[in-house]
Structure formats: structure tokens, C-alpha cells
Amino acid sequence: MFAAKSVVRAASALATRPRLWPTALVQLARFVPDRWWRRPPFVPLPPAELARFRSETMYGDPQVPPSPADIVVWLEWCRAQNRSAS
Image (cartoon, rainbow, N blue to C red; front, side):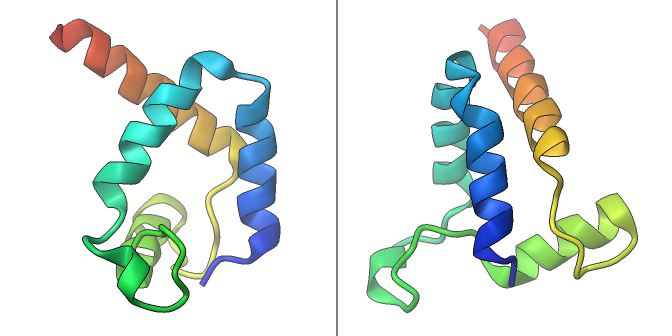
């Protein structure tokens, strides 16, 4: 659903924030479907339905990919939540 360009932009935003790398990996593992390697496109991506739902609730349009800035803010929030739960 989301273009490779969006994924590259998000990865670039995270590249300069190494403290978020563990959080990003944990979140990726939580959203990726079980046995993703058995189904095309053989890439660990969340289900398209989930991506559409998240975009519609965030931006009001299921076709809008999340902005890199929004992804960073969300990962910062996840990191803070994980730290406060410990």
C-alpha cells in the first residue's frame, strides 16, 4: 500500500536516532503478521488493512502514509510508555 519511498523516508528519520532503534524493532515485531516470510511480498510489513485503518484514524484518509515525523513522535511515545511501565 505505502510506497517504498515512504518507508525509506521513515528509515532515514530513524537513522539519526539510535535510541529509538530498539523501540522500532519491538513495534515492528508487534505489528508484523505471524509467518510473514511465507506470504508475498516476503517482507515484514503490517497487514494492509491495519495500515489503512491507522492512516484513516490519524489523517482522515486511508491512502495517506504516515509522515516520518509522526513515526518518530509515536516511537518516542512508545519508548516513554515502556520506560514508565518498568
